[in-house]
Image (cartoon, rainbow, N blue to C red; front, side, top):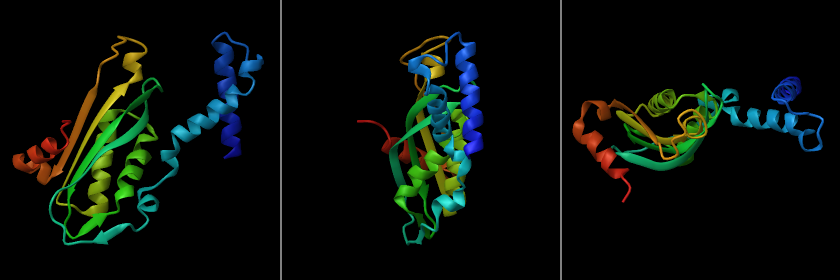
Length: 188
């Protein structure tokens, strides 16, 4: 881990230098190491696995109606520009004898968000992970996010918001189930 930090620090030092700055300037002396540590933190999802994260927090339950966890904050990095995208994730599932501990939904979102991503893949990965862990009859995930790569550069559209959804099982097959979920997560 220390070797990786040292390597990343050196790369950030070169980036700063190639941008035309002096990495030896007082304000930048510790920046390469801070940036390297920040990048390791922002991509820590690569060091996590679904099995370790869930850690057995799947419990027997007779619940067989929709469970919704809404407004889970997420922070990720766009794999195209390494710029942040920030938003919220809404998850629903229909249990079949097993429910997942509430905090695990946020942990699953974070694990996949803390990787270089595009929002479309992030949405799919979260849905498939919930389905795998719970064996639910249906899983739905909606993500709403603002992308700095669109806001700070390129077209510079400050009010743009991207929404993606992934519907699996009964959410894909039943319009009524899908509509119930989408109605539940609407802002009032």
